[in-house]
Image (cartoon, rainbow, N blue to C red; front, side):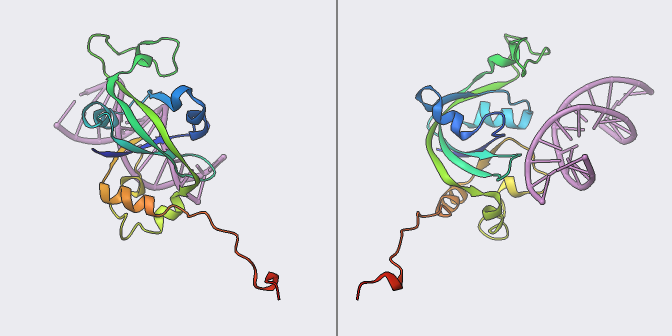
Length: 169
DNA sequence: GCCAACGTTGGC
DNA sequence: GCCAACGTTGGC
């Protein structure tokens, strides 16, 4: 069982769209970077879990948790001339690009923000790839240690406490 | 194989 | 909108 982080721009596809998708499942397609492709094709297995990360938005951060429900398979959008992800160089019997299917397990509300992650960038999360300067990879591995630590940063819903001056005499 | 030019990403 | 960082492309 491995852990990953998947980046998406919410203006293109965000956590709320995944939540509304049939069976809360979508095809994670359109990845056009070889290193990311290799992770999807060779690294991801059914049952792996991933953080759904929102990038290029008001509050970048981990917005949810997903499970890989289908391991890497050829990305059909690469062969579709009508798709914005169409890659004319792609040859059908030797696919260049791969997709996986992901299912939403849980939306994190509030999200674990990039700002929060950065607070730990010199210690627990010093090797987290997303925090590395200039990192643009949209699919990155996360260690179990990092995974567990990031989940521990979740905000516990705050209870409404009775204020002292509202205590009955 | 080198590397300059170019396009894209993503935080700010 | 800016800009640093990076990947890709193509000429040589």
